[in-house]
Length: 97
Image: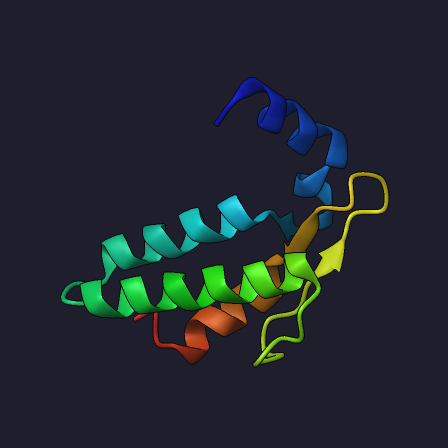
């Protein structure tokens, strides 16, 4: 992670609000896939679904599924995902085991 993104993340105060950036969601998913054996195809599919969903949200296009909640930061206008929503979404796809 670069210095700009680290500084921006600190300014958004994501730790206190339990929000995650798209990069945080991807690293969260990768961490869980590392713990689950024989799930490499599922991991690529789920990260691909997330990337497609995130691209639709960022571009303002209608999303296919509304299972993953998001908000926009008031100042930076970044798309942020609540940690609980990401965890529930990952459990729906059997990532946690």
